[in-house]
Amino acid sequence: MDLPAHEASRLIAVVTGRPPHAARKEDLTSRQSAALAALVARRLAGEPLQYLEGSAAFGPLEVAVDRRALIPRPETEGLWELAVAALGDAGPGTTIVDLGTGSGVLALALKHAFPAARVIGTDDRDDALALAAENAARLGLDVEFRCGDLFDALPGTLLGRLDLVVSNPPYVAEHEWDGLPVEVRGYEPRHALVAGPTGTEVLERIADDGYWWLGVGGYLLCEIGENQGPSMELAYGAFDRHIRRDLTGRDRYVVARKGSPCCV
Ligand SMILES: C[S@@+](CC[C@H](N)C(=O)[O-])C[C@H]1O[C@@H](n2cnc3c(N)ncnc32)[C@H](O)[C@@H]1O
View 1 (cartoon, rainbow, N blue to C red):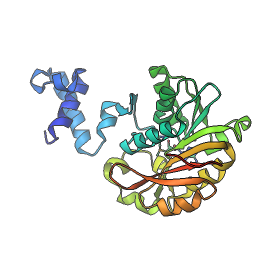
View 2: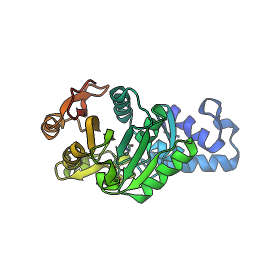
View 3: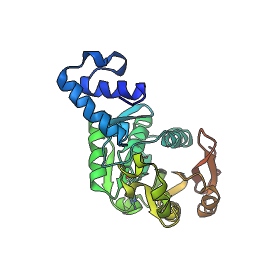
View 4: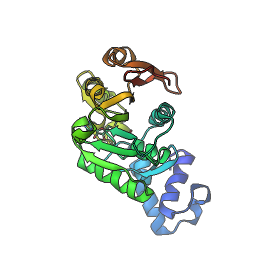
């Protein structure tokens, strides 16, 4: 087996159903050994470990993942943390929207942080929304999922009334797709990653429409590509806004607020 030891023990855990620290190759039955060999072959071909395990950690949650949606990334946990700090508190009148929810992670983690708030996750792919709804049911989190193109998924009664909008939208440019690692390009949905010729198309639409959907004082936080900070300063010019960095020091988030100083 040519896998790093920590990956091998995680795959042994998949076939035995035991935690990785307690899963030993020596204890496998012949059926489990065959199942492990199949998983190792898929991993060596490039399939992401999380798809083979069928789950991924995100903040306080563990969610199911499969090829219907993007695997949640550590950078997106940073977006969740910023959003929690920005909103601070939320009562029953608070409405939070996650645009492009995929597996549902941001919407679910926000509902976990603000149980009294109404939380809506949207996506334009029914299969991703089905996965998000399965995750919500398993975690017992009451999140509403709606299908549609960005804000079109929302009821018109929410126009001008949203308190917090978060999004990790597609932000890869078409010409960058071929340069992505095979783990990403060969397995994750292209639609979840590629925005268009420049990569900033979806982020710009969220800025334009988001201004009208937010209430005064509402926050809009998006994940961005590391080279997109300067163009997002311009695109989010109607807001008080800041570009924030991820843990590796790269520009990664635009934090914007309508009609009030932006405090995170
Ligand atoms: C980068 S993935 C993020 C998934 C999830 N929020 C996360 O952070 O792991 C982007 C998601 O946006 C969805 N999406 C792409 N274009 C969209 C659009 N125009 N309207 C709604 N959803 C869209 C994709 O289907 C995908 O699930």
